[in-house]
Image 1 (tube, rainbow, N blue to C red):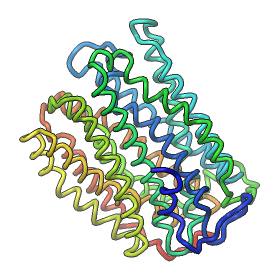
Image 2 (image 1 turned 180 degrees about the vertical axis):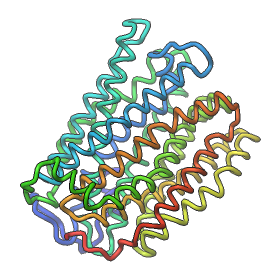
Image 3 (image 1 turned 180 degrees about the horizontal axis):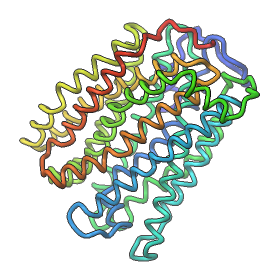
Image 4 (image 1 turned 45 degrees about the vertical axis):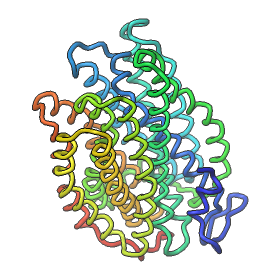
Length: 442
């Protein structure tokens, strides 16, 4: 989907077009929305592509003995990238509230590029020994720092620039762009699995998607430089003061937002884990498991937009609660079906249902939480909610699930984990007020 087609869904006819970086009154240009979405998609592509090739990365950098040994090391390294997200949320989120959304969004692209380059170019453990896993861990930490500061400014810009009554749809592009990233990663995975032998895929093929993303970085930086600014007023407070005000004055939203993020983070990472699950547990072909990634990405893209439109029509709370409840009730039967009859139909169906429901309530949560925060701390507050929630819950999901599978040999382990986290998030979302009619310019 090209930028013209992509942005035609976002900017409704009659919306105010922003030129020369001016503060938008009723909406931003289609080009500006495409810039925000393209940069976000690129960053999430770089981050999640690691999960798709965790089996091969584990064997390259972590030669631990045992069926699950190197895989556990690889997914643990995937998880460490989540633990620098809160730091990125604090530093870059506060920067966006103090100096504006635009410079913060350019900085995140630059940071994640350095991390991606390191992952793509690091020699194997067999070549340079312990230096290899150390470099990989450092690169993951840097990528996590960048992503921790990405979501807050990008989502704040989309919400603040949206026309009245369209904030849900505009904000849905944050999740939809992640779906695009997943879909592109799936395409690469399927193509490489079909074209390369398992030996070549393990030896060097998994590096190709990382190298390709580096070619797109100059484009992402260039188009982000053309973004309008939706919070141009300089804040005289220090970054520490801005962060402190979030904890003092908006503690309830922060805590409930983090708990609400739990099921989104866990369900998303279980979806990303389906590749490893299909190969390691279900013993399905690598090419088929990569097709499931493509299915998950396309479904996320479509249902994020559906969720955003429903948020504008039905309100945020309904879209936050009902899909979470549906996932909690359906996930165990779906995994029972999948483990009992592993194959293309079952794998793709389970992946699609998981991705669709997660995209809908993930979109609603990403709209409701920032709308409840004032503009002066919106980027910082959302960055903290997202970064802390994804670090605590998303960052540990793949390791926890792999560990549970290793010690219980129960293929239902991922499903039960989703059930528990869904219950926690439903309770948290029930306690947050409706935000559809709030003035986000306050």
